[in-house]
Length: 215
Image 1 (spheres, helix red, strand yellow):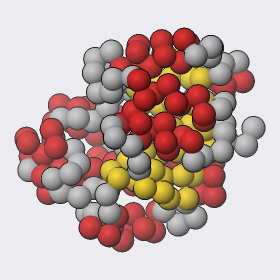
Image 2 (cartoon, helix red, strand yellow; image 1 turned 90 degrees about the vertical axis):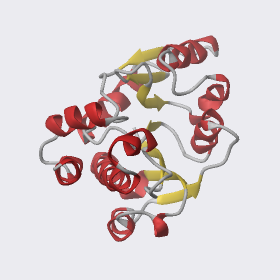
Image 3 (cartoon, one colour; image 1 turned 60 degrees about the vertical axis):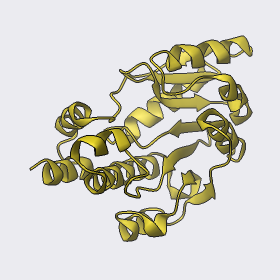
Image 4 (cartoon, one colour; image 1 turned 180 degrees about the vertical axis):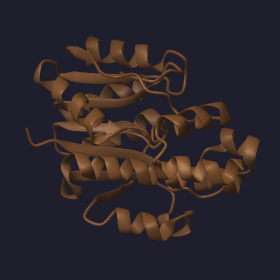
């Protein structure tokens, strides 16, 4: 199966990313943590399928981001396009529409996602039309689709709620898809999340960044 990986993310610009975390530790530090999280995610994706089958749907400007040099280096060989849409659900649907299938899509809030976890989500497509990886907060961290066009249903799903994963599953199923499930992970939204995830991935860029900003 010729799998593609899609990352939907914001450029880690202070004040535009990880604002909940930034309210606790400062926006500059939060952007540094976000940059490390994105770098870990990019590395996992490239490790899973190779940079030539990796896609980034980006909001913001990498040139103004914290860690811009490292991000440019990590994105060598990737296909990058700007996010479009009036809300996050619409932006997700638009991003999927630009990518060949099958596709595994992640965000930038799970730096502990490994190539093996991404490939496990992809493997579920052998038996299912779609595979969701729940997040502990009620959202989801990964969505794998045989046909990226199926993501059109996301335009009607409320995002960032305690029932987003359930609502997404129901929307996919209502469109006629068989939906499987893969591993549950914890998103990084606040200090408690960051502390927990840093412990789960002690050798990651994220853990090193968190150690610096939390010292």
